[in-house]
Length: 480
Length: 118
Image 1 (cartoon, each protein chain N blue to C red):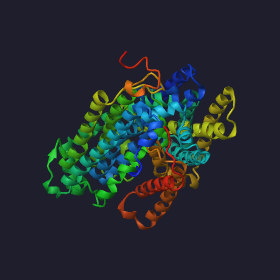
Image 2 (tube, rainbow over the protein chains, first blue to last red; image 1 turned 30 degrees about the vertical axis):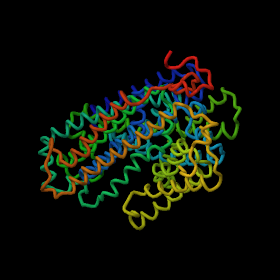
Image 3 (cartoon, rainbow over the protein chains, first blue to last red; image 1 turned 45 degrees about the horizontal axis):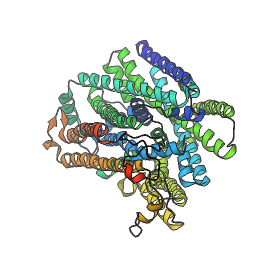
Image 4 (cartoon, rainbow over the protein chains, first blue to last red; image 1 turned 120 degrees about the horizontal axis):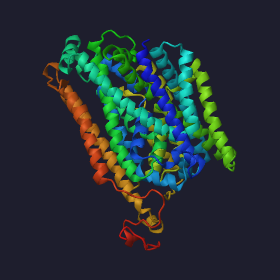
Protein backbone atom coordinates (compact mmCIF):
# COMPACT_ATOMS: atom_id res chain seq x y z
CA UNK A 1 0.00 0.00 0.00
CA UNK A 2 1.17 3.44 -1.00
CA UNK A 3 2.62 5.54 1.82
CA UNK A 4 1.21 8.69 0.18
CA UNK A 5 -2.31 7.43 0.89
CA UNK A 6 -1.51 6.76 4.52
CA UNK A 7 -0.21 10.19 5.46
CA UNK A 8 -3.53 12.05 5.01
CA UNK A 9 -5.33 9.26 6.86
CA UNK A 10 -2.94 9.52 9.80
CA UNK A 11 -3.26 13.30 9.88
CA UNK A 12 -7.03 12.83 9.86
CA UNK A 13 -6.92 10.50 12.88
CA UNK A 14 -4.67 12.85 14.82
CA UNK A 15 -6.92 15.82 14.05
CA UNK A 16 -10.00 13.93 15.25
CA UNK A 17 -8.15 13.02 18.41
CA UNK A 18 -7.21 16.63 19.06
CA UNK A 19 -10.78 17.82 18.61
CA UNK A 20 -12.01 15.18 21.02
CA UNK A 21 -9.58 16.45 23.64
CA UNK A 22 -10.56 20.07 23.12
CA UNK A 23 -14.22 19.12 23.49
CA UNK A 24 -13.54 17.26 26.72
CA UNK A 25 -11.82 20.35 28.12
CA UNK A 26 -15.02 22.33 27.58
CA UNK A 27 -17.00 19.96 29.74
CA UNK A 28 -18.27 20.96 33.12
CA UNK A 29 -18.76 24.59 32.19
CA UNK A 30 -22.00 24.91 34.14
CA UNK A 31 -25.19 22.83 33.95
CA UNK A 32 -25.56 19.24 35.03
CA UNK A 33 -23.08 16.58 34.09
CA UNK A 34 -25.69 14.39 32.38
CA UNK A 35 -26.90 17.20 30.13
CA UNK A 36 -23.32 18.00 29.32
CA UNK A 37 -22.06 14.50 28.66
CA UNK A 38 -25.03 13.06 26.80
CA UNK A 39 -26.43 16.17 25.13
CA UNK A 40 -23.56 18.64 24.90
CA UNK A 41 -25.37 20.97 27.31
CA UNK A 42 -27.90 21.86 24.56
CA UNK A 43 -25.39 24.24 23.06
CA UNK A 44 -25.15 23.12 19.45
CA UNK A 45 -25.10 25.90 16.89
CA UNK A 46 -26.55 25.67 13.40
CA UNK A 47 -23.50 24.42 11.53
CA UNK A 48 -22.48 21.75 14.04
CA UNK A 49 -26.09 20.61 14.40
CA UNK A 50 -26.49 20.21 10.64
CA UNK A 51 -23.19 18.40 10.28
CA UNK A 52 -23.76 16.03 13.18
CA UNK A 53 -27.16 15.08 11.75
CA UNK A 54 -25.77 14.50 8.27
CA UNK A 55 -22.68 12.66 9.52
CA UNK A 56 -24.55 10.48 12.00
CA UNK A 57 -27.01 9.54 9.34
CA UNK A 58 -24.53 9.14 6.47
CA UNK A 59 -22.69 5.90 7.15
CA UNK A 60 -20.59 3.41 5.24
CA UNK A 61 -23.52 2.81 2.92
CA UNK A 62 -23.47 6.40 1.65
CA UNK A 63 -19.79 6.19 0.72
CA UNK A 64 -19.11 2.56 -0.08
CA UNK A 65 -22.22 0.39 -0.39
CA UNK A 66 -24.48 2.94 -2.12
CA UNK A 67 -22.04 4.11 -4.81
CA UNK A 68 -21.01 0.47 -5.28
CA UNK A 69 -24.61 -0.45 -6.04
CA UNK A 70 -24.94 2.58 -8.34
CA UNK A 71 -21.92 1.22 -10.23
CA UNK A 72 -23.86 -1.96 -10.96
CA UNK A 73 -27.40 -0.60 -11.28
CA UNK A 74 -26.89 2.84 -12.85
CA UNK A 75 -28.94 6.02 -12.51
CA UNK A 76 -31.87 4.21 -10.89
CA UNK A 77 -29.85 3.82 -7.71
CA UNK A 78 -28.83 7.49 -7.67
CA UNK A 79 -32.53 8.33 -7.94
CA UNK A 80 -33.18 6.10 -4.94
CA UNK A 81 -30.36 7.69 -2.96
CA UNK A 82 -31.79 11.15 -3.55
CA UNK A 83 -34.82 10.25 -1.42
CA UNK A 84 -32.50 11.13 1.48
CA UNK A 85 -32.49 14.87 0.78
CA UNK A 86 -35.76 15.08 2.70
CA UNK A 87 -34.04 14.07 5.96
CA UNK A 88 -32.13 17.36 5.94
CA UNK A 89 -35.20 19.45 6.67
CA UNK A 90 -37.96 17.00 7.60
CA UNK A 91 -36.65 15.78 10.97
CA UNK A 92 -35.90 19.27 12.24
CA UNK A 93 -39.14 20.79 10.95
CA UNK A 94 -41.50 18.05 12.06
CA UNK A 95 -40.13 17.46 15.55
CA UNK A 96 -39.23 21.10 15.51
CA UNK A 97 -39.65 23.65 18.22
CA UNK A 98 -42.36 21.83 20.10
CA UNK A 99 -40.01 18.94 20.75
CA UNK A 100 -37.20 21.30 21.72
CA UNK A 101 -39.48 23.19 24.12
CA UNK A 102 -40.98 20.09 25.72
CA UNK A 103 -37.65 18.31 26.12
CA UNK A 104 -36.36 21.35 27.98
CA UNK A 105 -39.49 21.53 30.12
CA UNK A 106 -39.21 17.83 30.98
CA UNK A 107 -35.46 18.18 31.45
CA UNK A 108 -35.09 15.31 28.97
CA UNK A 109 -31.57 14.19 28.09
CA UNK A 110 -32.55 11.17 26.01
CA UNK A 111 -35.41 10.30 23.68
CA UNK A 112 -36.69 7.93 26.35
CA UNK A 113 -36.84 10.75 28.91
CA UNK A 114 -39.30 12.43 26.57
CA UNK A 115 -41.37 9.27 26.05
CA UNK A 116 -41.43 8.67 29.79
CA UNK A 117 -42.69 12.15 30.55
CA UNK A 118 -45.20 12.12 27.69
CA UNK A 119 -46.72 8.72 28.42
CA UNK A 120 -46.04 8.54 32.14
CA UNK A 121 -45.38 4.84 31.80
CA UNK A 122 -42.41 2.75 33.00
CA UNK A 123 -43.40 0.04 30.52
CA UNK A 124 -42.93 2.38 27.56
CA UNK A 125 -39.56 3.48 28.92
CA UNK A 126 -38.29 -0.07 29.53
CA UNK A 127 -39.45 -1.40 26.18
CA UNK A 128 -37.83 1.54 24.38
CA UNK A 129 -34.59 1.15 26.29
CA UNK A 130 -34.41 -2.55 25.45
CA UNK A 131 -35.12 -1.88 21.78
CA UNK A 132 -32.46 0.83 21.59
CA UNK A 133 -29.79 -1.11 23.44
CA UNK A 134 -30.32 -4.36 21.54
CA UNK A 135 -30.71 -2.97 18.02
CA UNK A 136 -28.27 -0.10 18.11
CA UNK A 137 -25.66 -2.20 19.86
CA UNK A 138 -25.84 -4.61 16.93
CA UNK A 139 -25.78 -1.78 14.41
CA UNK A 140 -22.73 -0.34 16.11
CA UNK A 141 -20.88 -3.63 15.95
CA UNK A 142 -21.63 -3.96 12.24
CA UNK A 143 -20.27 -0.45 11.62
CA UNK A 144 -17.10 -1.26 13.58
CA UNK A 145 -16.57 -4.30 11.42
CA UNK A 146 -16.93 -1.98 8.41
CA UNK A 147 -14.42 0.48 9.86
CA UNK A 148 -11.90 -2.26 10.55
CA UNK A 149 -12.33 -3.75 7.08
CA UNK A 150 -11.84 -0.34 5.47
CA UNK A 151 -8.57 0.32 7.32
CA UNK A 152 -7.51 -3.24 6.52
CA UNK A 153 -8.09 -2.72 2.79
CA UNK A 154 -6.48 0.72 2.70
CA UNK A 155 -3.39 -0.02 4.74
CA UNK A 156 -2.79 -3.71 4.26
CA UNK A 157 -2.69 -4.22 8.03
CA UNK A 158 -4.40 -7.38 9.29
CA UNK A 159 -8.01 -7.10 10.41
CA UNK A 160 -7.36 -7.26 14.16
CA UNK A 161 -4.76 -4.50 14.08
CA UNK A 162 -6.93 -2.39 11.79
CA UNK A 163 -9.94 -2.82 14.06
CA UNK A 164 -7.80 -1.97 17.07
CA UNK A 165 -6.67 1.33 15.53
CA UNK A 166 -10.24 2.17 14.64
CA UNK A 167 -11.58 1.22 18.07
CA UNK A 168 -8.98 3.13 20.05
CA UNK A 169 -9.40 6.32 18.07
CA UNK A 170 -13.18 6.36 18.43
CA UNK A 171 -13.25 5.15 22.01
CA UNK A 172 -10.87 7.71 23.43
CA UNK A 173 -12.62 10.82 22.23
CA UNK A 174 -16.14 9.56 22.84
CA UNK A 175 -15.38 8.40 26.36
CA UNK A 176 -13.66 11.55 27.53
CA UNK A 177 -15.58 14.10 25.49
CA UNK A 178 -19.12 12.74 25.41
CA UNK A 179 -21.77 14.10 23.07
CA UNK A 180 -19.95 17.39 22.52
CA UNK A 181 -16.87 15.58 21.21
CA UNK A 182 -19.13 13.44 19.03
CA UNK A 183 -20.84 16.50 17.55
CA UNK A 184 -17.64 18.48 16.99
CA UNK A 185 -15.80 15.59 15.39
CA UNK A 186 -18.92 14.95 13.30
CA UNK A 187 -18.67 18.50 12.00
CA UNK A 188 -15.08 17.94 10.87
CA UNK A 189 -15.90 14.49 9.52
CA UNK A 190 -18.86 15.96 7.62
CA UNK A 191 -16.62 18.62 6.09
CA UNK A 192 -14.17 15.91 5.02
CA UNK A 193 -17.02 14.01 3.39
CA UNK A 194 -18.00 17.08 1.37
CA UNK A 195 -14.45 17.84 0.25
CA UNK A 196 -13.66 14.19 -0.52
CA UNK A 197 -16.84 13.88 -2.58
CA UNK A 198 -16.02 16.96 -4.64
CA UNK A 199 -12.41 15.95 -5.35
CA UNK A 200 -13.36 12.44 -6.39
CA UNK A 201 -16.21 13.64 -8.61
CA UNK A 202 -13.88 15.95 -10.51
CA UNK A 203 -11.25 13.22 -10.75
CA UNK A 204 -13.69 10.67 -12.15
CA UNK A 205 -15.19 13.07 -14.70
CA UNK A 206 -11.73 14.01 -15.99
CA UNK A 207 -10.65 10.37 -16.14
CA UNK A 208 -13.80 9.49 -18.07
CA UNK A 209 -13.30 12.27 -20.62
CA UNK A 210 -16.25 14.42 -19.52
CA UNK A 211 -19.85 13.61 -18.62
CA UNK A 212 -21.19 13.26 -22.21
CA UNK A 213 -18.43 10.78 -23.09
CA UNK A 214 -19.11 8.76 -19.94
CA UNK A 215 -22.83 8.68 -20.72
CA UNK A 216 -22.10 7.53 -24.27
CA UNK A 217 -20.00 4.68 -22.88
CA UNK A 218 -22.83 3.70 -20.55
CA UNK A 219 -25.37 3.80 -23.41
CA UNK A 220 -23.11 1.65 -25.54
CA UNK A 221 -22.75 -0.90 -22.78
CA UNK A 222 -26.36 -1.10 -21.59
CA UNK A 223 -28.94 1.64 -22.25
CA UNK A 224 -30.90 0.59 -19.14
CA UNK A 225 -28.10 2.01 -16.98
CA UNK A 226 -29.40 5.52 -17.75
CA UNK A 227 -33.07 4.72 -17.04
CA UNK A 228 -34.68 4.90 -13.60
CA UNK A 229 -35.35 1.15 -13.73
CA UNK A 230 -31.91 -0.34 -13.14
CA UNK A 231 -29.48 -2.32 -15.30
CA UNK A 232 -31.83 -5.31 -15.52
CA UNK A 233 -35.04 -3.27 -15.50
CA UNK A 234 -36.09 -4.67 -12.10
CA UNK A 235 -36.24 -1.44 -10.04
CA UNK A 236 -39.93 -0.61 -9.87
CA UNK A 237 -41.33 2.82 -9.08
CA UNK A 238 -43.11 1.38 -6.02
CA UNK A 239 -39.95 -0.16 -4.61
CA UNK A 240 -37.79 2.92 -5.14
CA UNK A 241 -40.52 5.19 -3.76
CA UNK A 242 -40.78 3.11 -0.59
CA UNK A 243 -37.28 4.31 0.26
CA UNK A 244 -38.93 7.63 1.00
CA UNK A 245 -40.01 5.92 4.20
CA UNK A 246 -36.87 3.92 5.00
CA UNK A 247 -34.20 6.55 4.39
CA UNK A 248 -36.41 9.64 4.09
CA UNK A 249 -39.26 10.62 6.37
CA UNK A 250 -39.01 7.49 8.55
CA UNK A 251 -35.68 8.72 9.87
CA UNK A 252 -37.72 10.94 12.19
CA UNK A 253 -38.19 7.83 14.36
CA UNK A 254 -34.50 6.98 14.77
CA UNK A 255 -33.26 7.65 18.32
CA UNK A 256 -29.86 8.91 17.13
CA UNK A 257 -31.64 11.59 15.06
CA UNK A 258 -34.29 12.39 17.67
CA UNK A 259 -31.70 13.08 20.36
CA UNK A 260 -30.04 15.63 18.07
CA UNK A 261 -33.27 17.57 17.69
CA UNK A 262 -33.17 18.34 21.40
CA UNK A 263 -29.52 19.36 21.48
CA UNK A 264 -29.58 22.74 19.75
CA UNK A 265 -28.99 26.07 21.38
CA UNK A 266 -31.70 28.25 19.88
CA UNK A 267 -34.40 28.40 17.24
CA UNK A 268 -31.97 30.26 14.99
CA UNK A 269 -29.54 27.34 15.16
CA UNK A 270 -32.36 25.05 14.08
CA UNK A 271 -33.28 27.30 11.13
CA UNK A 272 -29.71 27.42 9.89
CA UNK A 273 -29.22 23.70 10.41
CA UNK A 274 -32.16 22.68 8.27
CA UNK A 275 -30.90 24.68 5.31
CA UNK A 276 -27.28 23.54 5.71
CA UNK A 277 -28.37 19.94 6.38
CA UNK A 278 -30.47 19.79 3.21
CA UNK A 279 -27.69 21.21 1.06
CA UNK A 280 -24.95 18.99 2.50
CA UNK A 281 -27.02 15.78 2.42
CA UNK A 282 -28.08 16.42 -1.16
CA UNK A 283 -24.58 17.32 -2.26
CA UNK A 284 -23.01 14.19 -0.80
CA UNK A 285 -25.73 11.76 -1.90
CA UNK A 286 -26.03 13.15 -5.44
CA UNK A 287 -22.32 13.29 -6.13
CA UNK A 288 -21.22 10.08 -4.40
CA UNK A 289 -23.75 8.10 -6.41
CA UNK A 290 -22.83 9.88 -9.63
CA UNK A 291 -19.23 8.90 -8.89
CA UNK A 292 -20.36 5.29 -8.56
CA UNK A 293 -22.13 5.45 -11.93
CA UNK A 294 -19.31 7.31 -13.72
CA UNK A 295 -16.76 4.85 -12.34
CA UNK A 296 -18.19 2.07 -14.49
CA UNK A 297 -16.68 3.10 -17.85
CA UNK A 298 -13.54 4.40 -16.12
CA UNK A 299 -12.82 1.13 -14.30
CA UNK A 300 -14.98 -1.70 -15.62
CA UNK A 301 -15.22 -5.13 -14.08
CA UNK A 302 -15.13 -4.46 -10.32
CA UNK A 303 -16.95 -7.36 -8.65
CA UNK A 304 -17.30 -6.26 -5.02
CA UNK A 305 -19.47 -3.13 -4.66
CA UNK A 306 -17.75 -1.85 -1.51
CA UNK A 307 -14.42 -1.70 -3.34
CA UNK A 308 -15.57 0.58 -6.15
CA UNK A 309 -14.85 3.87 -4.39
CA UNK A 310 -11.44 2.92 -2.92
CA UNK A 311 -10.27 1.43 -6.22
CA UNK A 312 -11.49 4.34 -8.30
CA UNK A 313 -9.93 6.89 -5.95
CA UNK A 314 -6.58 5.15 -6.21
CA UNK A 315 -6.93 4.89 -9.99
CA UNK A 316 -7.91 8.45 -10.91
CA UNK A 317 -6.19 10.55 -8.22
CA UNK A 318 -2.59 11.09 -7.13
CA UNK A 319 -2.01 9.04 -3.99
CA UNK A 320 -2.00 11.90 -1.49
CA UNK A 321 -5.33 13.15 -2.86
CA UNK A 322 -6.70 9.62 -2.77
CA UNK A 323 -5.75 9.55 0.90
CA UNK A 324 -7.84 12.66 1.56
CA UNK A 325 -10.76 11.25 -0.40
CA UNK A 326 -10.59 7.91 1.41
CA UNK A 327 -10.65 9.68 4.75
CA UNK A 328 -14.28 10.45 3.81
CA UNK A 329 -15.72 6.93 4.15
CA UNK A 330 -13.56 6.56 7.25
CA UNK A 331 -15.10 9.75 8.62
CA UNK A 332 -18.58 8.53 7.69
CA UNK A 333 -18.16 5.30 9.60
CA UNK A 334 -16.58 6.96 12.62
CA UNK A 335 -19.22 9.64 12.85
CA UNK A 336 -21.97 7.02 12.84
CA UNK A 337 -20.24 4.78 15.33
CA UNK A 338 -19.43 7.53 17.83
CA UNK A 339 -23.06 8.68 17.86
CA UNK A 340 -24.35 5.16 18.45
CA UNK A 341 -21.82 4.58 21.22
CA UNK A 342 -22.81 7.65 23.21
CA UNK A 343 -26.50 6.89 22.59
CA UNK A 344 -26.35 3.30 23.84
CA UNK A 345 -24.32 4.48 26.81
CA UNK A 346 -26.98 7.09 27.64
CA UNK A 347 -29.71 4.44 27.37
CA UNK A 348 -27.92 2.32 29.94
CA UNK A 349 -26.84 5.06 32.35
CA UNK A 350 -29.78 7.45 32.15
CA UNK A 351 -32.71 5.34 30.99
CA UNK A 352 -32.05 2.13 32.85
CA UNK A 353 -29.77 2.85 35.80
CA UNK A 354 -30.97 6.28 36.87
CA UNK A 355 -34.62 5.66 36.00
CA UNK A 356 -35.12 2.26 37.52
CA UNK A 357 -32.19 1.17 39.62
CA UNK A 358 -30.89 4.15 41.55
CA UNK A 359 -32.66 7.44 40.84
CA UNK A 360 -30.86 9.27 43.67
CA UNK A 361 -27.30 8.33 42.69
CA UNK A 362 -24.89 11.14 43.59
CA UNK A 363 -23.40 13.15 40.72
CA UNK A 364 -19.91 11.82 41.30
CA UNK A 365 -21.10 8.26 40.93
CA UNK A 366 -23.05 9.16 37.78
CA UNK A 367 -19.90 10.66 36.34
CA UNK A 368 -17.74 7.63 36.97
CA UNK A 369 -20.49 5.39 35.70
CA UNK A 370 -20.96 7.38 32.47
CA UNK A 371 -17.26 7.30 31.59
CA UNK A 372 -17.07 3.67 32.71
CA UNK A 373 -20.07 2.40 30.75
CA UNK A 374 -19.03 4.23 27.59
CA UNK A 375 -15.53 2.78 27.80
CA UNK A 376 -16.65 -0.74 28.68
CA UNK A 377 -19.28 -0.73 25.91
CA UNK A 378 -16.59 0.21 23.43
CA UNK A 379 -14.34 -2.61 24.60
CA UNK A 380 -17.18 -5.14 24.37
CA UNK A 381 -18.01 -3.97 20.86
CA UNK A 382 -14.35 -4.27 19.89
CA UNK A 383 -14.17 -7.85 21.19
CA UNK A 384 -17.42 -8.79 19.46
CA UNK A 385 -16.32 -7.17 16.21
CA UNK A 386 -13.21 -9.38 16.13
CA UNK A 387 -15.51 -12.27 15.31
CA UNK A 388 -19.07 -10.98 15.05
CA UNK A 389 -21.61 -13.51 16.38
CA UNK A 390 -24.41 -14.48 14.00
CA UNK A 391 -27.01 -13.13 16.41
CA UNK A 392 -25.61 -9.61 16.16
CA UNK A 393 -25.50 -9.74 12.38
CA UNK A 394 -29.07 -10.95 12.45
CA UNK A 395 -30.27 -8.20 14.82
CA UNK A 396 -28.50 -5.56 12.76
CA UNK A 397 -30.88 -6.31 9.88
CA UNK A 398 -33.70 -4.78 11.92
CA UNK A 399 -31.77 -1.94 13.52
CA UNK A 400 -32.77 0.73 11.04
CA UNK A 401 -36.26 -0.08 9.78
CA UNK A 402 -37.30 -1.86 12.96
CA UNK A 403 -36.54 1.14 15.16
CA UNK A 404 -38.27 3.46 12.70
CA UNK A 405 -41.43 1.33 12.76
CA UNK A 406 -41.25 1.19 16.57
CA UNK A 407 -40.70 4.84 17.40
CA UNK A 408 -42.05 7.01 14.58
CA UNK A 409 -45.62 7.22 15.88
CA UNK A 410 -44.97 7.27 19.63
CA UNK A 411 -42.67 10.24 18.96
CA UNK A 412 -44.55 12.16 16.27
CA UNK A 413 -48.12 11.53 17.37
CA UNK A 414 -47.06 11.74 21.01
CA UNK A 415 -45.92 15.23 20.19
CA UNK A 416 -48.93 16.40 18.19
CA UNK A 417 -51.96 14.27 19.07
CA UNK A 418 -53.29 14.88 22.53
CA UNK A 419 -55.30 11.66 22.58
CA UNK A 420 -52.22 9.50 22.12
CA UNK A 421 -51.50 7.53 25.29
CA UNK A 422 -49.33 4.76 26.68
CA UNK A 423 -51.57 1.96 25.42
CA UNK A 424 -51.25 3.27 21.90
CA UNK A 425 -47.49 3.74 22.26
CA UNK A 426 -46.91 0.23 23.62
CA UNK A 427 -49.11 -1.40 21.01
CA UNK A 428 -47.46 0.64 18.27
CA UNK A 429 -43.92 -0.29 19.31
CA UNK A 430 -44.72 -3.99 19.65
CA UNK A 431 -46.61 -4.02 16.34
CA UNK A 432 -43.85 -2.10 14.59
CA UNK A 433 -40.97 -4.36 15.59
CA UNK A 434 -43.01 -7.58 15.47
CA UNK A 435 -44.42 -6.98 12.01
CA UNK A 436 -41.03 -5.78 10.75
CA UNK A 437 -39.40 -9.06 11.70
CA UNK A 438 -42.32 -11.10 10.32
CA UNK A 439 -42.40 -9.24 7.01
CA UNK A 440 -38.63 -9.46 6.74
CA UNK A 441 -38.87 -13.25 6.72
CA UNK A 442 -41.84 -13.22 4.38
CA UNK A 443 -39.97 -11.01 1.90
CA UNK A 444 -36.89 -13.18 2.11
CA UNK A 445 -38.93 -16.23 1.28
CA UNK A 446 -41.44 -14.97 -1.28
CA UNK A 447 -40.14 -11.62 -2.58
CA UNK A 448 -41.24 -8.17 -1.48
CA UNK A 449 -44.83 -8.04 -0.29
CA UNK A 450 -46.72 -5.52 -2.49
CA UNK A 451 -43.39 -4.79 -4.20
CA UNK A 452 -42.22 -2.34 -1.56
CA UNK A 453 -39.37 -2.30 0.96
CA UNK A 454 -39.90 -4.21 4.21
CA UNK A 455 -40.28 -1.05 6.29
CA UNK A 456 -43.43 0.21 4.52
CA UNK A 457 -46.11 -2.09 5.86
CA UNK A 458 -44.89 -2.10 9.52
CA UNK A 459 -44.96 1.71 9.55
CA UNK A 460 -48.60 1.65 8.41
CA UNK A 461 -49.51 -1.12 10.86
CA UNK A 462 -47.87 0.65 13.78
CA UNK A 463 -49.85 3.80 12.92
CA UNK A 464 -53.10 1.84 13.06
CA UNK A 465 -51.96 0.20 16.31
CA UNK A 466 -51.15 3.58 17.86
CA UNK A 467 -54.55 5.05 17.03
CA UNK A 468 -56.54 1.97 18.04
CA UNK A 469 -54.58 1.48 21.26
CA UNK A 470 -54.94 5.11 22.23
CA UNK A 471 -58.68 5.30 21.59
CA UNK A 472 -59.69 1.85 22.78
CA UNK A 473 -58.61 1.87 26.40
CA UNK A 474 -58.94 5.30 27.94
CA UNK A 475 -59.75 8.57 26.23
CA UNK A 476 -58.15 11.30 28.25
CA UNK A 477 -56.49 14.17 26.39
CA UNK A 478 -52.90 14.92 27.36
CA UNK A 479 -52.05 18.46 28.38
CA UNK A 480 -48.82 19.66 26.88
CA UNK B 1 -58.66 14.03 15.40
CA UNK B 2 -62.20 13.02 16.39
CA UNK B 3 -64.61 15.34 14.61
CA UNK B 4 -67.40 14.74 17.17
CA UNK B 5 -65.44 16.38 19.98
CA UNK B 6 -64.09 19.79 19.06
CA UNK B 7 -61.19 21.12 21.10
CA UNK B 8 -63.14 24.01 22.50
CA UNK B 9 -64.43 22.66 25.85
CA UNK B 10 -61.14 21.60 27.36
CA UNK B 11 -59.00 24.37 25.91
CA UNK B 12 -60.98 26.80 28.06
CA UNK B 13 -59.49 25.44 31.24
CA UNK B 14 -56.05 24.59 29.84
CA UNK B 15 -54.25 27.32 27.94
CA UNK B 16 -51.89 26.08 25.30
CA UNK B 17 -48.35 27.43 25.28
CA UNK B 18 -48.50 30.29 22.75
CA UNK B 19 -45.32 29.05 21.09
CA UNK B 20 -46.98 25.78 20.13
CA UNK B 21 -49.25 27.46 17.61
CA UNK B 22 -46.19 28.54 15.62
CA UNK B 23 -44.53 25.19 16.18
CA UNK B 24 -47.58 23.33 14.84
CA UNK B 25 -47.66 25.53 11.76
CA UNK B 26 -43.97 24.85 11.09
CA UNK B 27 -44.46 21.11 11.45
CA UNK B 28 -47.20 21.27 8.81
CA UNK B 29 -44.81 23.21 6.57
CA UNK B 30 -42.32 20.35 6.97
CA UNK B 31 -44.92 17.80 5.93
CA UNK B 32 -46.13 19.89 2.97
CA UNK B 33 -42.56 20.37 1.80
CA UNK B 34 -41.87 16.63 1.92
CA UNK B 35 -45.01 15.93 -0.13
CA UNK B 36 -44.04 18.58 -2.69
CA UNK B 37 -40.50 17.15 -2.78
CA UNK B 38 -41.86 13.66 -3.40
CA UNK B 39 -44.19 14.75 -6.21
CA UNK B 40 -41.39 16.67 -7.96
CA UNK B 41 -38.97 13.77 -7.60
CA UNK B 42 -41.47 11.13 -8.69
CA UNK B 43 -43.08 13.16 -11.50
CA UNK B 44 -39.89 13.96 -13.38
CA UNK B 45 -38.20 10.62 -12.68
CA UNK B 46 -40.99 8.40 -13.94
CA UNK B 47 -42.77 10.91 -16.18
CA UNK B 48 -39.70 11.72 -18.27
CA UNK B 49 -37.72 8.58 -17.42
CA UNK B 50 -40.55 6.27 -18.51
CA UNK B 51 -40.01 7.16 -22.19
CA UNK B 52 -37.88 4.90 -24.39
CA UNK B 53 -34.17 5.59 -23.89
CA UNK B 54 -33.78 6.78 -27.50
CA UNK B 55 -36.05 9.74 -26.74
CA UNK B 56 -34.04 10.98 -23.76
CA UNK B 57 -32.29 14.31 -24.13
CA UNK B 58 -29.21 15.21 -22.13
CA UNK B 59 -28.66 18.31 -20.01
CA UNK B 60 -25.08 18.94 -18.81
CA UNK B 61 -24.47 15.41 -19.99
CA UNK B 62 -27.06 13.88 -17.62
CA UNK B 63 -30.29 12.23 -18.79
CA UNK B 64 -33.12 14.81 -18.69
CA UNK B 65 -35.31 12.89 -16.23
CA UNK B 66 -32.45 12.66 -13.74
CA UNK B 67 -31.43 16.26 -14.24
CA UNK B 68 -34.93 17.56 -13.51
CA UNK B 69 -35.85 15.10 -10.78
CA UNK B 70 -32.63 14.93 -8.79
CA UNK B 71 -30.39 17.87 -9.74
CA UNK B 72 -32.99 20.62 -10.15
CA UNK B 73 -35.14 19.01 -7.44
CA UNK B 74 -32.25 19.17 -4.99
CA UNK B 75 -31.31 22.75 -5.90
CA UNK B 76 -34.94 23.80 -5.59
CA UNK B 77 -35.29 22.21 -2.15
CA UNK B 78 -32.06 23.90 -1.06
CA UNK B 79 -33.39 27.30 -2.12
CA UNK B 80 -36.72 26.67 -0.40
CA UNK B 81 -35.07 25.69 2.88
CA UNK B 82 -32.82 28.76 2.79
CA UNK B 83 -35.86 30.99 2.20
CA UNK B 84 -37.70 29.20 5.00
CA UNK B 85 -34.82 29.65 7.40
CA UNK B 86 -34.32 33.30 6.57
CA UNK B 87 -37.85 34.61 6.14
CA UNK B 88 -40.56 32.19 7.21
CA UNK B 89 -39.64 30.35 10.39
CA UNK B 90 -40.15 32.27 13.63
CA UNK B 91 -37.50 32.90 16.24
CA UNK B 92 -38.62 32.08 19.76
CA UNK B 93 -37.10 31.25 23.14
CA UNK B 94 -36.97 27.51 23.75
CA UNK B 95 -36.68 27.64 27.51
CA UNK B 96 -39.88 28.20 29.42
CA UNK B 97 -40.11 31.93 29.64
CA UNK B 98 -43.30 33.30 31.21
CA UNK B 99 -42.70 36.75 29.75
CA UNK B 100 -42.89 35.57 26.14
CA UNK B 101 -46.22 36.61 24.60
CA UNK B 102 -46.68 36.81 20.86
CA UNK B 103 -50.30 37.91 21.54
CA UNK B 104 -50.29 39.75 24.88
CA UNK B 105 -54.07 40.36 25.22
CA UNK B 106 -54.86 36.64 25.21
CA UNK B 107 -52.77 35.98 28.26
CA UNK B 108 -54.13 38.25 30.89
CA UNK B 109 -53.86 35.59 33.58
CA UNK B 110 -50.07 35.75 33.67
CA UNK B 111 -47.98 38.72 34.68
CA UNK B 112 -47.33 40.39 31.34
CA UNK B 113 -45.15 43.36 32.07
CA UNK B 114 -42.56 42.47 29.46
CA UNK B 115 -43.97 41.60 26.06
CA UNK B 116 -42.10 41.69 22.77
CA UNK B 117 -43.37 45.26 22.41
CA UNK B 118 -41.11 46.53 25.17
